[in-house]
Image 1: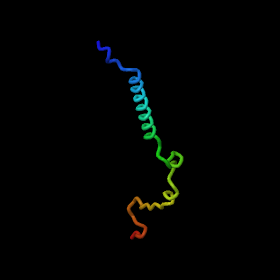
Image 2 (image 1 turned 120 degrees about the vertical axis):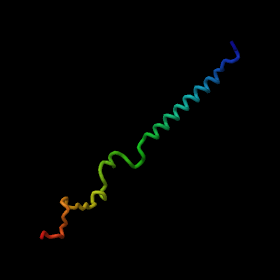
Image 3 (image 1 turned 90 degrees about the vertical axis):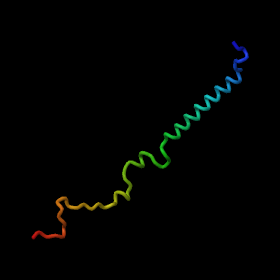
Image 4 (image 1 turned 90 degrees about the horizontal axis):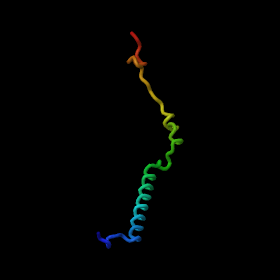
Amino acid sequence: MYPDSALSAAQLAIMAVVVVVSLAVWLIAVALAARQPRGTSSASNAGPSERETAATVTRLPSDGSTAGKTAA
């Protein structure tokens, strides 16, 4: 074959370092993308805030009558 085509040990080491560094960068990027954003945790999002619970809800009667009318 071609005896001069073999890679040197330095070239093989550089190739191995590039692969390992690329894998590390990819794993870090995936870990950063998968983490929760700052300021929001499952404990702080457990329920509605006080402002949301203080809101009043107006319900209309289900039979369609209004409170101002009298039956004649």
